[in-house]
Amino acid sequence: MENILFYFARDYQGAPFVLFGPSHLISLAIVLLINLSWRPLRSRLDEKARRTIRIVLTVILLGGESSWHVWMLATGQWIIRDMLPLWLCSLSVWVSAFMLLKHSQIAYEFLYFMGILGGSLALLTPDMEIYGFPHYRFIEFLMVHGALVTAPLYMTIVEGLRPTWRSIGSIGLIMLPYLGFVTLINFRLGSNYLYTAGKLSTASPLDLLSPWPYYIPEMIGLALLICVLLYLPFAVKDWKK
Image 1: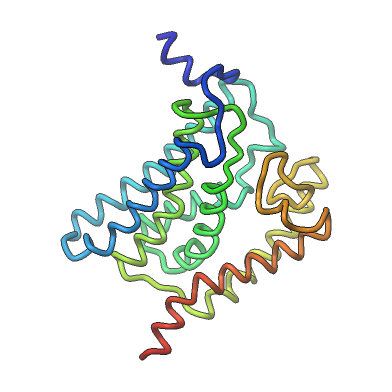
Image 2: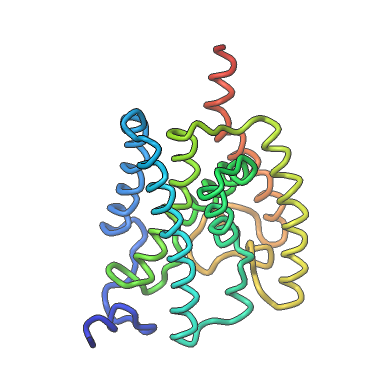
């Protein structure tokens, strides 16, 4: 029992997380291989298999997110300044579950851009601190964020959903007011949701941008650029037609 609790400890004494270390690279490779497998597998997946995949992804997302809150409570780390579901990835978890269970096109369009964007950045530069493999936090973080990227890609490649140019404008109409709302929350609570009050304490792409607050419009512009790049495969396909 003590050996099991060791991997759930707040003050973990095992190997710390190493950015692009072996366990991190293996995790990224697993996520990549899963998503590369959808195209050759899609013709073999009947409706029952597809429904099972959607349910499994939903369980990973909701189970992982919920267990994180339980673990934070159990280890005395749950505070309102950090744990409200205002983070892009936390919001995307619940939207993903709705998309997978209801086959929602609106939820899909949000996740194709914001889920892939947020999930990919989190996978590449996780804020893991001391929690290396095989600590619970390492496994939970990589599984949930891997599923955030996988869910919209699966719905695209296997289920046949796709975004449009209008989707990018719709995302902007949602995210800009949401960013303003979250910024007000940050000023009220002293929090840093969506990183509008400061950069991360660990390495992240924000380090390449200007100091606060000038990096905020740069962050918005970069997100827009990434959305356009994510849409490019569909733009090229439509152009060829």
